[in-house]
Amino acid sequence: MPQFTSETPQLASAGSPAPAADTWAEDTTAQLPSFYSPQSQPARETTSDPTSASAPLKPIPSTDRLDLQSPIPTPAKDAVVPPPPSLLSPAFTPPATPGTPTPGNAQRLNSVSVDSTIPEGGCGTKRPRLLETLPEVQCIVRARIPTVSGTEMFLHLYTNNVDNKEHLAIVFGPHIRSRSLDAPREGETEMDRMIRGAYTGKLYPGRTTSRAAESEAGSAAAAAKPAGGPPLVRIHSECYTGETAWSARCDCGEQLDEAARLMSHPDNSAAGGIIIYLRQEGRGIGLGEKLKAYNLQDLGSDTVEANLLLRHPADARSYGLATAMLLDLGHPEVRLLTNNPEKIRAVEGPGREVVVKERVAMVPLSWKGEKGIRSREVEAYLETKIKKMGHMLDF
Image (cartoon, rainbow, N blue to C red; front, side, top):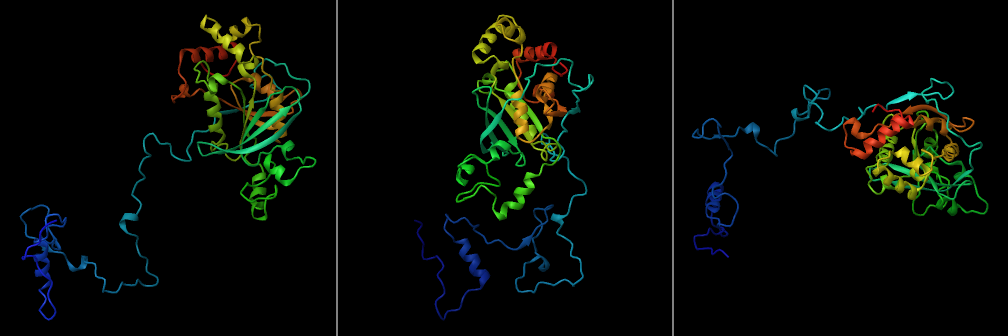
């Protein structure tokens, strides 16, 4: 502890005259102990000329002092008080920060109109084999999924009468609803309906009915009205290696991520979007056969030749389930996100139950100068899809 000496100033005792304020401030601050942070000399209200260090200090004008005793002047009733200079807009608009896109100016989706009923309709010349009748599908559960990007989507799980797999519809937009999910089921309670996702509005603790409350009825009705034309649709086939095992032999994982991003694109935000996720690994041949095809590719075959050497079709996928799921979601007209012309005809179904109005290109990110998959294998894969499978991309 610092030791205070007898020279330390003492407070004036009662009846003794108090020292002048300036003298007391100067004396006390000059003799403060060394551990005090204030300056050893009291600061004076002065201004100095920055051009001359030796210029004498001048008192601050009284007009610049803050006087709490003076009344605040009240402007006239009709007087226009200008804003402070710091709030005025600059004379020019500064450019956007480099590398940061300007909100509202996102690049438009690259879409073209298509018509599968005419040869020059942009759907290629091949006619894929279609099921004679569409499968029967039923959505058994739906749940809200908040995503890491901040976008919410609804995951719908479907069963059907042609296989034992659980296929999915990833839905962006509250107005897109499943008819089979919303249909009442015998013996179910209101809680049963909410648990399987057959509710309107939002779930919250204590809710007791699947119908929207009166306070939510207006917003729920507005959300149920489709807007912005046909939704953007992506038909995506399961790819364990590309989506989970970080494979650079294909761009399936990148396409799934990009499809989800485009569903929230400004051009598409009003219409909503649907990703139909079909469980047909390896273009329909299964994961085990797909891994054998990878070994054949390392031996020199391309992706089509490898499937044929294993006695499989080059593409064994079927899209009848996707057609039936789109109808269940109430959208017989769609904009399809694909480069594959055969997929357009296949998704439309045997009787054109679904009509593809536009095709939106799915361009690899690395081809657009963005960060995407780059490898010798994926370049060979894309080249094969263009040259041997007719995909509409400029290689």
